[in-house]
Image 1 (cartoon, rainbow, N blue to C red):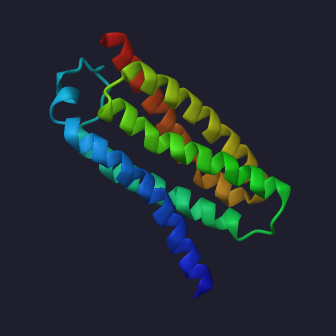
Image 2: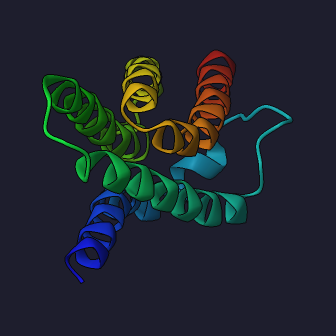
Length: 155
């Protein structure tokens, strides 16, 4: 029972990053964002919700797998990177959609991507499955970085 609650809590912590970001997104996704020039490879808006729900769930499972391992300095460092990237993840939406600063959002997402890479490296050392669960996030994050960069260039 305790492990189930830890798993649910880990997933909910990650989903909260999306909830926080959605407050800023909702207010400008149908106004300011629509007016931006976007590259041809921009996915339709309906894609983002399901993708992020899946990614946050995978992140939560990975977090759970690492949290339930023995407490070590390696685990502590991995969790610092994990929560650092999670904070930057939530901040990206607040910066991009909330204050509508595409340049600052691009800087944020570059730092986010770097922290995701470090998180994956540390997670792999602790629990291989946890590392693998973050690979889709890295791939989507890389795509989001390219998309953010293209929007920056076009606008």
